[in-house]
Image (cartoon, rainbow, N blue to C red; front, side):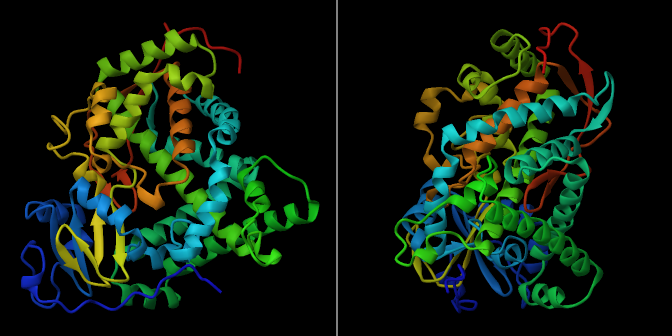
Length: 473
């Protein structure tokens, strides 16, 4: 049976002179400790050595890839020779062999089966769920209130993903699913920063963190498998994504029994979609509200567009093309603060990259956070400038100078869903509320699996008294 995993070679044995330049390393441990404690700082330093640089972490040899042409070579030209990064084994504890973690033929098959389920016309059917929950969520807000917008967006996207994926919305069920996922996600984040041998050892030991993870994972599995069984027994076609996964068929399968996904495959893809649809969208919205709060002039333009186009009514997918400035605000936000800030790969056979021979078993990282702030591709790269995204600018920008959703055969399958969700939420809430930054809070990046703000993101709310009259929900 194809497990979706690839057997990678051990650490490649290469001479230093055959490697691209990189930061000095310590004997025996290389840059391992700094990679664990200050990965972003280390990658920034490595980028000074060139567009392809070497970072030695024991037992993995890591290459920093920091040029659009090299990223294209990695993601597209050599995609058959590389698999997911060296954290994939840890992700599999939670996601099994879903699209994020599967490699080789299994990934290609699952991608082919699932792609039609994310056609624009299909995902547009979830728009009402997104705006309905956004409407409900803001009912609890008060004028002058100080909120943690990171937590607020996490709660909002949690309700949306549970409803669109599983068809569930009872508050207690949503809360328990959210808590179980949060525990599981924290475990992946912590274990992912540890050396592989220690990671595997601790996963087997009954330490508190591992125990909480396994308990949370057991609840998620119980919930998902129970829903799968109910859907299969009832034979009813639902509108949620879980029902769509159960109904996909592989017309190319030689054996009829292999034409549908197994319960395990459906479970893995459901958990993967849950993780991607919840965490990344919440993070993207958090940074967007922060940037609007710290740029009042841009926030005013954003709200003026909403007032003119929507006039207080609930936005629909058909409105998105009429909200170009809102779309540019989101695009620029994800440039400065990409929710997934770095993408990893690992070679399972040698490749050539930028003229360098990369051995099998090497890790490669292509950090969106570095390249999307590179002055070679973006003028005044640290400034929040939505107006830079003109049609001419987009046309002239190298393909992999901006890739918040990845690229190549592994381009995020839910990109359209996530963009629609973020724009509809921004449009729904932005008509009614102005956000102001809490000047007492110092914003600090926390680059874990996703790019979270350390300590949350406190903002003040101001009800828009001059906004267009809100349409009835």
